[in-house]
Amino acid sequence: MGRVTALLIPLVVAGLVVALGVTLWGRGDLNRFICDGDCGSSAVVDPEGLKILAAPPVPTPDAASPGPIDPAKVAAVVRGELGESVLGPRVGLAVTGPTAADVATEADRPYVPASTTKLLTGFAALATIDPDTRFATSVVRSGDGIVLVGGGDPYLATKPPRKGADRVYRADLTTLAKRTAAALKKTGTTTVTLGYDASLFTGPDASPGWEPSYVTANIVTPVSALWADQGVTRGIRDREPAAGAARTFAELLSKQGIDVSGTPKAAVAGAGSELVARVRSATLAQIVETFVRVSDNEAAEVVLRLVAVAAGQPADFEGGAAAVRASLESAGISTTGLVLQDGSGLSRRNRITPVMLVEVLRQALAAPRTSELVADLPVSGFTGTLVDRFAQLTAARGTVRAKTGTLSGVHSLAGYGTDADGRPVLFALMADRSDKDQPLQAQAALDRAAAAIAGCSCG
Image 1 (cartoon, helix red, strand yellow):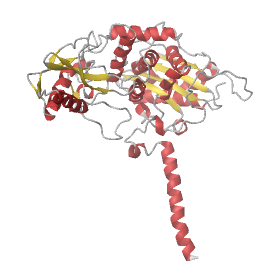
Image 2 (cartoon, helix red, strand yellow):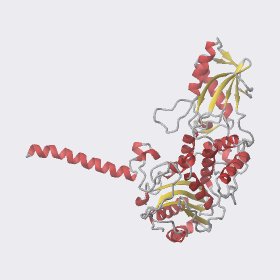
Image 3 (tube, one colour):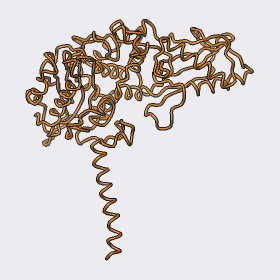
Image 4 (cartoon, helix red, strand yellow):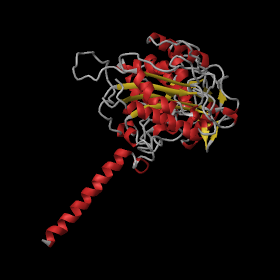
């Protein structure tokens, strides 16, 4: 008997440990130990009903269907949360099902969107550019020297990342320097001059709609088709990121036995220049997933310019905005009230309506090419900008996907969940005159509203 007990005790303890671990993982309490805070969408099990479609839904008679959303019921369940004084006097709500445009309170009024702007940028990118596209950073011959040519890779790094350090693939200058040095040495070249070409993008590198302090206060890097580590070195953003990347590349070439004479200078690679070496970025789909999940301002601005290039527009802020607008209109989304000064949402001059946000999500679901945009959204309590939110809303953790938007006095949340009866609900919550002294309370009010939508019987 004693021997049986001795064998059973470890098994029971192991079972309890496994059960506790499964419970804690499901609640997201182990995120910081397993994934350094953000386990990513791939590590989150979608709740039943929260499945991202790979193809447009085909309407079929179904007696078990919970039916369409009743906007009045949705408005009723969120009235208390959205009426909280901390959110201020301007609060908008729009809701819709995947196939029917049902909307609710103040849906057509334009609001300052903050980072929910990235939903428009991401949608336009996936709709305009093949999601499998990769962007090359190249070295070409130019006379007696070489030119480093930026191709708009927002995640080009200086060094190869540690294995498993990041879910987005990062091309790097160290690898490019090794390839370049090997190619040069084959021709007997060991000394070169170095130019750098960031001419793919045009116009101002900071939006006129941004606060002047955004660049000077180290908040955002000037937009460039060529940078390394998004122009950040030891926490400081380079005012001339293309020049900084070229200086770094010169140092890396030197380590590979190639001497760079003089200081790297701005240049434009001639058409038909001989390719020496290149590295390629992550796919566009991976780039969009990352900038939506972590709300990466720099990457969103680069992608805005890439959308402009693909659409035949000038590769500047205005061209990018025009390309996004055209993409929305091509998908049948009304752009009434739309004002875009950038692709990230940093500009307070941007204006987007709640109904526009839910229509972007609805139209994204309607086509395989863009449907991943909804899958890219942060998961409540688990990933991206929602990893530390919904902490007190246990029932809603893991059941809501949403893009956040935050500026001083501005809070928005746009995403997707299922109600208590299994109805998919797309929603947008926007407030642009909230209490600037209580930002966390404002965020919490929107989280509770989203949780209420996910928990109601809204048919």
